Length: 121
Image (tube, rainbow, N blue to C red; front, top):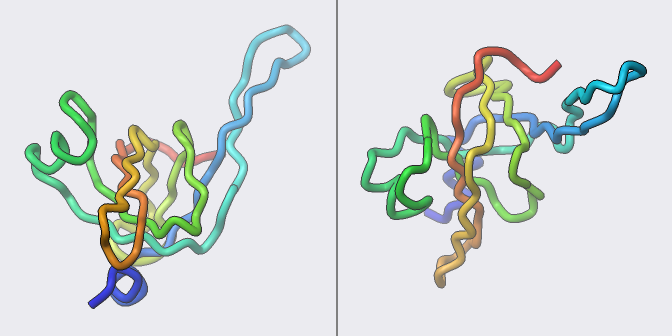
């Protein structure tokens, strides 16, 4: 079964948030998050320490690994909210993105996610 089929069949639905930094009237910097992509499909799993080190590098924090097809534009410091499926209602910061294109049938991003206590408001 292709990765695309696995994501479609077993994946969760998520919203990708992109941070925007601005200065308020007092000069203080604020960060807000706006949706960059909605209803994207992601395949989630809980990787063990060996997988985290092999895919993302030693010392990477990773509560969940997300696999996303490359038609989704992801960037460092983006956030991900799981809206349906496994882990629905949980929110994550993107810790690291690995480009996974090693002769497989579908090139994809592997994303190390770190859970955040609240959503992107």
